[in-house]
Image (cartoon, rainbow, N blue to C red):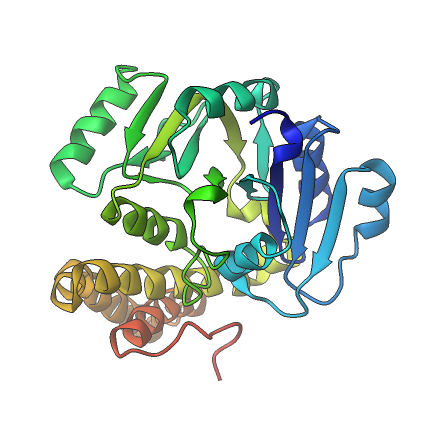
Length: 303
């Protein structure tokens, strides 16, 4: 990459609080790189504030809630740069991130995706392998700081990942059937099956604040948004395993969660614990819907 003009940052949002987005944009701290915000609605209420502070930010509204994967695809279709950095709006980039990114691209060269690592989090893994034994060894080596600064892996998390767009045949990069969750794992699996290279690097570090930080206070209090996410997490997990490993494998892996959700839902129903009952109801229905082949078109309250 000759300069940061060859890179576009894509940030997919949906009614994300202003402070969250501003903190993310301010952490980028580089006027040379192009930034495209994809708002999954027909109105972006923070537009004037952001445009007044950041001259390198463009904003596009999709007109509907496409989810993270399709929202990313929408963004890819509107950029011409060689590289794209997908950032969640609740990500804070390390101060050296954009100083290092050109160096990392030159160093690695033959890559389809490079995943970033967390500044402090040692609980959630930023990368790994689909094979259980390989993954367990990687987790141990990673936690023991026994891996190279930049090392080849089979998957990376999607909150911050660098894509080499020259390696992709078209701009429909993510499977449009995913609404939330697992779209990055599915993409990585498809690339690994094509013998393409995926890396993780400690030279590109971030803080990921987590999904609650991107919800408004009223959404957190009424728990509707959290239940929505639970529904889609369960739906996407089964769809991912069924698509990539077969229906039998997916059923064996997740059938226990289906029964657990059902019995907990019944328990909380008969003990009049409505909030807990709803939590497991949404989880059960998300997984069951995926198992019987229903699409991931659930967006709100159950009828």
